[in-house]
Length: 279
Ligand SMILES: [Zn+2]
Image 1: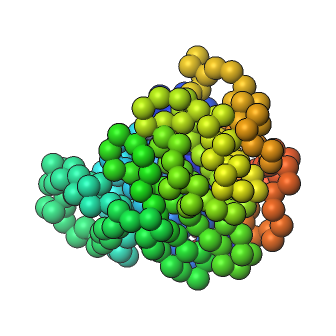
Image 2 (image 1 turned 90 degrees about the vertical axis):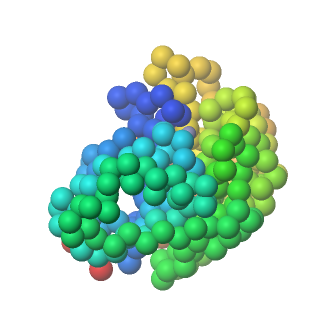
């Protein structure tokens, strides 16, 4: 079992139906949270994933809409009596600040706190992050206002793959990171410093020759404008869809996603992952 659940799809300003962008990757052995926003246990619970089953967390960068949920998540795990270690991965810049943030909460004095192991990722292209029986994760630096990483995940059993640009201007690092993936999840905040438009995301998808493009981290609610999917379709000939909260991408299927919207609807109807399945 390898699936990715989108827990939030909004840019920095969330709305009721669109939380800040973050996602969870659920395998047989490992459950990996990518970014920790607000209090992530709420979205995880709604997605049927017990937050205590998390084994690993990647913090892409130290902006509040990606990292501010760390203290609450760790505190809630501690209050629920967690004993087993938790791995947290990020760039030096990011993890130095996460540790400082936790220091402000005096976490070293929280009694019987479970082990948290920090893994600092070098700021090199395709740096190995995680290799487990379900999947491998590699990271590459991308172009944002502060140090940030995009991710590539290869699912071992199905030989399928996805990449996630995170917050970035259009850049060759994401093209190389995404080369030939089945699914590219690319931000579409809009053309601005450190960000990308839907049209530009389509160009990246075309250059990387990906199977399908999912747009994420886009303006929602009253800030939403235009038809982002149509914009991306002007530059990318493959399937394009908007990532939405609680959308599930099933990477067990060997074939490429032919019609993301249809597959999403079908998969959404059977979100069955529960704590009992975790080994
Ligand atoms: Zn962001």
